[in-house]
Every structure is written in structure tokens, then in C-alpha cells.
Image (tube, rainbow, N blue to C red; front, side, top):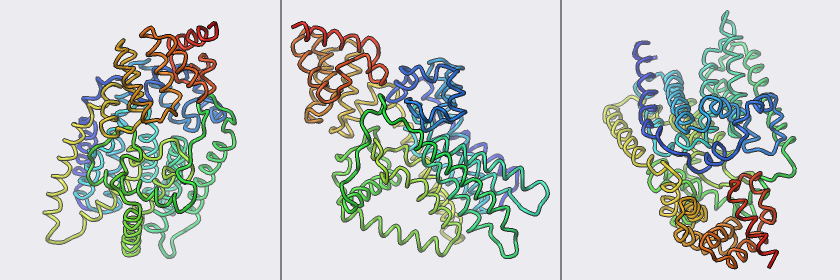
Length: 509
């Protein structure tokens, strides 16, 4: 490997520090989006007794947020005991995790590519990319940081696994196994761990005459453990949920429609990787409006062929392609998911893209100094874009205003702005936001109808409040008993009481 070990250590430290320092301004931000619910509203992570439920996997059968990500809950519970409901403490953990991911990525890229400079540039571009703002800043998405941390830690440990050498089997093997199982317990795309481990051995470590047994045992044990976890996850999943009352909708009715729609999503995600503008917390069909389905499918096919050719010619590139595909598959609507596309879904796949970038930068030739200079400039531009993107997450009002700007057809954008205005006592503004949300949702959102009810109630228009709450109840039966909305983590106690009063007034009249 090129470079002096001391240079390696300094570059690792500098990469991690850059990742950490870039997000220092966010330490003063308030809760926003899912963290308002998971940390601010839900008491689950604030009760240390639930730690045992998570560690014993009993949580897999409980109706709680992130029941299928027990290690994420363990992390949040630990933070809650230290910081209570102080967002700065939770955010500090995110900064350390992101810095650790960047450092681990640099170390792993250097081992795989043998190029210190190319690995540092690729890891830096990963760390500074504005697509990661959602993952790093929003506390509710810690699982994406954790799965990347543990997967990279496991792959780094696997590089030290050397059957036949004393002291290089059990220690690295157990650490690899533990880290990859922890990745799976952090988020669903942790399933990429055993796949990446098998690809790493088959492509880079499998040599004629070398012992295969230890590697096959490690890969097999990891695969069985991860497979058993996912079997428990789906087998113990609560059949009836108050929180997840509605199942995730299918992306499309038939396979061809799914392929065309998913191709448009993949194309949009690739565009955000290459040109990260107009990022937001809630994408929808509006954000795909300029992407033709046939053109998108052609692009996906072309990239698949190009990736396949590169993988055939370069085994290290093949490893990068495998990681990208294994990490993106679980969040590609093969099984229905509640949000078809999001920036956070790309955090783990981009570690595979970083390997491909490092390999491209490591290629010898006269163009390499210019390529490295260009990569450094790109890193600086990405850092500036990240600093510009961060303030949109400083609080709920800023977040939802930006969502409505980027995606004016986002029901959540208008609903969120309405909720912020309602909480601030700006009832007329809240009503206007909810009415825009009603138009966008074509009257099909129970929460928008309930928001209208609360706004009309605050303005003294009790009849209209009752009418809109009745509409909400027709769309979602939970609104007939507002106390269940607290357990469903949809409303605070005070809002549920207001909805109950509207119900009682309607029944008496």
C-alpha cells in the first residue's frame, strides 16, 4: 500500500474531522420531522427498562417505532438516558457516527485500492456530500448511520482475517461476525453485509491452495445469523398495529409498471448524487416530472451494462458494484415501503460508489493530477452545498417550508407547516396551510382534515370543526377515539383533548 503509516493515520483523522466539523452548526438545531415523534413525543426510548426488550429482541413483536431495528433503539435509549430530550446530545452522537463512518471508509478504501490519495479524496467526497444532510441531521434516521458504521467496521475487520496465521482468525472473525450482525439489527439494508463479505472473499481473497474452510465458515455463520434475525423480524411482526394502521402501498400494480417507475426513481437518485440540488424531506411524483420512463429505463440498462463490464474487467470494481446493488435493493420498493424514495436511502450505497470513485482516481496516467485536482474542487463545492442545505433542518417550520417549495404537491409539506403555525398560535395561517394540503391530497388525508378541525376550533368555528373531524373519522377510524391517536404517536395529549371536545360537542348537537 502506498504511503507511510503515519500519513495514513493523519489522513484518516483529517477525513473524520472534516466530516465532524462540517455538521457542527447543526448542534443548535431543534427537533424536526420524525425526531419530534420518536424523541419528543414517544416515551419508549426514555424508559431504560425497554433496553432489555431490545437486546432480547422481544421488541420485534411490540407495536413501537423502529421495532424492526433493535440496535437503533438501543442507541437512542442510551442517548435518552444521557441527554433526556435535549436535541444537542442526540446530534452530537450523529456527528461522531458520521465521522467514524468517514474514517472507516477511508481505511477500507485504502486497503482495497492501495492508493492513499485516491482513497482520501473518495472518502472526503462521501463525507461532505449534501445528500447526507438528511441522515446526519435528522435524529430519527440514525439507523442509516449505524448500518453503515457496522458494515464498514465488519469489512475492515475481514481484511485482517487470515486463516493459517496465528492470532489472525478468531479475533478478526468474531469481530467481523458481530459487526455484520449488528448492521442487520440496525436497518434492513444490513442484509448487504453477508453479501459484501462473500464478494470480498470470492473476488479479492480467494487464492488457489489457500484454505477455504475458515472463510466459508465465517460467511456461512454470518449469513445464518443475519437470516435468522430477518426471519424473526418478519415472523414476530405485530399483526395489528396502532402506529402502522395502514400497510405501505405498492409502488405499482404490475411488474412492468414497477420497473418503469422504479427506473425513474433510480434515475432521480443518481441525478441527486451527481448534481445534488433541490433536496427535500418528502419526494413524490412531482420530483419525477421531468424524467421520462423509457429514457430512465434505458439509462438504468446502460449503467447496468457499463457496471457489469467494469466489474468483469476489475474485481475491485465488482466488489463496489455488489455493495451498491446489495445496499440499494432493500430500499427499492421490491417490498412495499412507506416512502418510495429518500436521500437517507443512499447513505450506505454511496460507500460502494466511493470505492468505484477511488478506483477511478487511482488509475495511473497523465490525467491523474488533473483528476485529483478536480476531485478536490468537487469536495469543496459539496461542502459548500452541505452548509447551504443544513439550515433547512434547523426546525420544523424551516423544514416544511423547504419541502413545500421543492415539492409543492407534498401533503406532508403543507400539513407540517400547518402544524407549526397551529402550535405557534397563528390559527389563520394554519388554516390556509391545511386548506392547501386538502387540495393537494384531494380530500384524502385524515390528518389534514383533523388539522382543519383544530384550526377551525381555535378560530371559534365549531360547526366547521365538527364537519372536518367527521371527514377525518371516515378516512381513519382512529379519529373516532382521539385518545388512541396519542398511542399511535400522531398527536400530543393536548391536541387529542381538543379533538375529543369537538367530538363531544358534535354528539350533543
